[in-house]
Image (cartoon, rainbow, N blue to C red; front, top):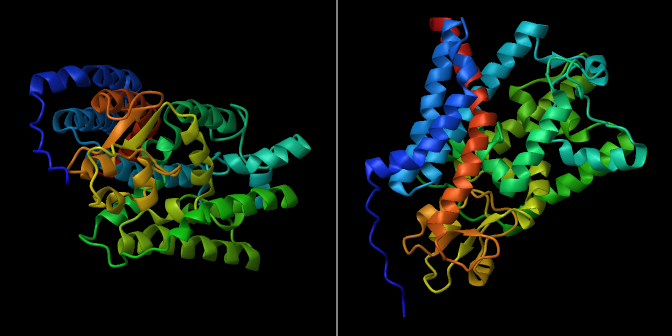
Length: 386
């Protein structure tokens, strides 16, 4: 017998929602405390606005019981404002977005999290780091450089697994924003085998990085080089590399998300995303399907931005390894069958408690990591007008 659609939940009371938001408000104030004392007016305003932005979004998550749509506002803002602040900083310090190869070899370039899995084999076989980024605090303009980035990544990953890709990645918001523009997908049928794309890229780029002793993905395939920094085009090879970056960015980050309403770069190409999927097996939190409530409406499957749900996985009552814990399927399910879950507990036992515990962790890290990036980008824009 079909399960009846449950009535929509009444919003939480404002008082209760404020009380639940209080820890996040205090954490946000603490994280942006340094911004309030800056003499630069644009930075002061950016800090205040970003702090309020993050607190208000969390309040709306608590009041409306919804996760995905409010998280999306943060994530798209992060994706769009990161290039603004980053490019401005690079242009001020170097005068160009192009990186001379000797600068990369010398480690005078910011470290990025995407090549982390590509470092493992070279480090194991050669006891050396092949990524051209600073590892010491005084090693370049990146501050803590690689040591800080790896530490931040590891701390977040231990708690939220591939949730990193929904709450910390400062690139994914661009494609998510593009996917949000069309009302309906033009391309609705996608071959499920494309989900293996990130694993193929991860394997190929890891082996190439070992063989060439350089981060092959960063040198040849990263779409986001088009909006951050790239290899200086001093010769034909450099021009080819930059052409590849632009083409991949246009296809995977702009065109395909507009056509499919999916995060296509993350779902079908990103090697870091594939690597993060492994940590979903160790993360405390996951998303389950309560089979006692589920009927085959497939709304959860259609809503997933990375195709982390299939008919088979739904029948098993679980998401695939590639689940980013964005909450889209939970919000889309009209029967409360898709639920947040704490590993080791029964399915659908106090799922809202599981959601709250996950969000307190994920949102705290989003404020700490993504909040400063949003504030920097906003300050860069405000500097022009204030």
